[in-house]
Image (tube, rainbow, N blue to C red; front, side):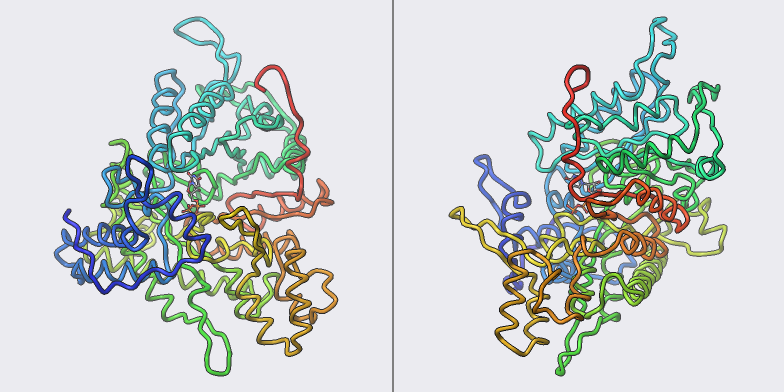
Length: 589
Ligand code: UDP
């Protein structure tokens, strides 16, 4: 598709220095010598125009592609919405792979396993992350029919995937990321749970154990459960459910790995069960997908919808938010068409279900601006209200797109059809991504996480370090603390420690609002995840932070409560726990 010439009067993006550094280092297109051959303005125009160009093939589109390109451009440079990194990097380039999330099947054959490995390599090269369920592989020690030998099991193959990823990341623009999943009733589950015990092992993998509802009931009832050979369903062993659960808790306490996902909960939200069961998620867990499915994500920056009236009162402009959600859905649907997929099987699956994942970032900054503590009922209620709006409006937008360009091809056999909803253009519309780099580009807090700190250190060019204070916080202090000496004392404390805790000069209500990840209880972390999950089609990226002194019992309670609250997975991180890992030598080290 031909791109449109860049209008001369485009507004320039305003980037803070961190955003600029990330953009130059990782996103701008480079020439043979590694020098940038586009400016930030050209990058955003490349993305906006190549995505908007897709409109031309839809006769009923109400947009002239040139006008839409401009609207998309403005939306991005004003920090209202950004698509996931591969779209920013690859849109309008020959590589053209625009999705962040993929799930690949791993069949139980040498040919199948190595096909999957090759496909993963192609995806990593293009900036995407891959998730795999290894549950179909026969367990270690099982017979190999053709040779009469002994199978080495899922872990041994995962090690090969890990090494391949390591090599590809040397040449790529982005760290290749993997999610490895094993069902709790696979005979090699204990080896899987302990796989990351040694430092550096499976460094290119996040691991998650897939728990079933039946297993959770067995834990609560104190029962044992059966392990199955995935090839024929024959029982290959038995374990005490509570013991396995304790082990998961212990590992999460010690190192944060592996995480857990609730498989039945995920499949309860599978919009296209006729297409198969969901067995895996993408690397950070927020996107459950069918084998060979891919999904492109995008996020609206909630902080950028907070407006201030003459009296300095802050409110969230929900009308503007709804408007941007509609545009973002159109953008993400166009991305599906614009993307070049590394495999025909993937292209086919993606075009059948047309999943997109619109989410939010800047939530903690938004709460700061509104003066609402992250760990309050008010924050949970507002979170639900906002995500409800994003979910509802994105569905409306998807329904309108279906009128314009047709429903997603498997709609007729989807749960929506059964429920008399739709037709929709997309099998899913919402996902809450981690927004690791997007939040840096937009200059906001990431996803729905609380701010990690109120100040951060920035490396300036000549090797000097500069301590910067969160701008929303600095403005709030300026506005609400009248004594300049007190203002100074508060800002100095924050520059030194990164938080307001134990700051003698800070008024109590200031400390109450400007909490950081470590000041917020694990229960509040979980409650926020659950609040957003209630209004999200796919899943929510969230880490439940715990203080160093948290116990295994605390983690057990979090896991059980997470199950009760209906979240799709849990990632915990106990402060300082990674350093507790042991160095191992010998096999597998
Ligand atoms: N991802 C990846 N490699 C990375 C970071 C992310 O493959 O180094 C993938 C992965 O599937 C992850 C998804 O991108 O779950 C979204 O991550 P994030 O929102 O942090 O990406 P961003 O768009 O902000 O770069």
